[in-house]
Length: 454
Image (cartoon, rainbow, N blue to C red; front, side, top):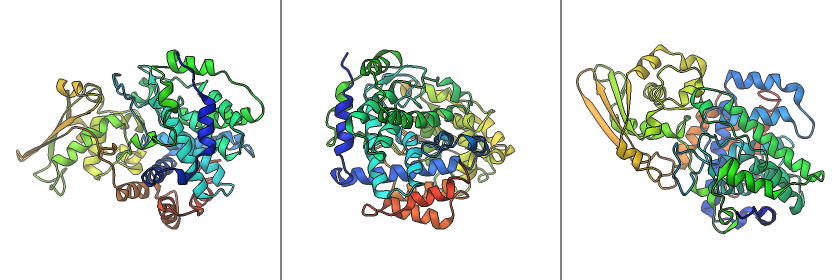
């Protein structure tokens, strides 16, 4: 067992500047930041998240507000639209659980800083560095089967972001990394699969814990790298690779190996959604044309085939349901923040379409994991017309990335009703401009903090 070299990680964090990264890495980082921010803002549209923010208002502190970080972190994963995940290279685990989602853990820290007027360029720089480190902790370990990734690797990214914002010395940052990684949430995957929205709190708690770890390090707390190593190579994760954590820092950017989600639902559902869209391409109204949609058949890999609930207990349960996600996509033409709001989720036509979906495991598709996650969707209409399409992998992976226009469209749909139109435009322009300093994130914080969260 090789220990975690937190000193080397901290040294990378402190010496790296945005100009050190290749242009394509910076462009991806800005797109990931815009996408993650859109998911967070879309999450703030949900009544439960707003109620959480109201309940936590008394918990606001002047310097490191628990209520603010918890609410923003919870909002950032409410839509299950949190991009930036990575799959372990060994890929032998079933279900194929992403091992790291650092972006929604670190973004609340940056918005908290933006509320105090931090410059966009510096915040993008910190986002790049913190999430590169967080991704490496995910890629360099294998999450134990049955566990969920939120609150495990993400707090490390939040700790690095806080340490850089607070100008801690490298030694304190190294301690913050060890502290943040030494109290993993280690919660179970079964909770979100069954609709437990408490899953979203894990990210909020992870954001707070990472930020607090940096503050504890600044106050002189000590940490055990032996404990961190034991957690990452035995108790919560296995297969710890010290080389993955530190080799090529600054020259090999793991962040760009992650994906951007086109849909606000579990990643395992995405291949079926892509296949459905391909099958009905050219049909102006797939629900009503050809005398109406009669049935949908989905053949996919085993774990996706298990997400078969047509009646769901919560919007998160719907996001882990192939039938409900397909029904919503068919009706709305998209899966964004609005689609699973309580009144939209309760539409009778969603339930009727979801009941028409039949899922089957295709053993050859299961055998294709981890390199492919295939799905075939066949659509049947009442006049007897059928159409079918197969995809081998969901869109949004590095091999089939979303366009900038797609990321912007997703952001705008998620952010509407939270930000003013002028602020939406300013964010899109400010975050995607490689040369901009600006105050787009400060404008977001001004419109969000105090209104939707403490």
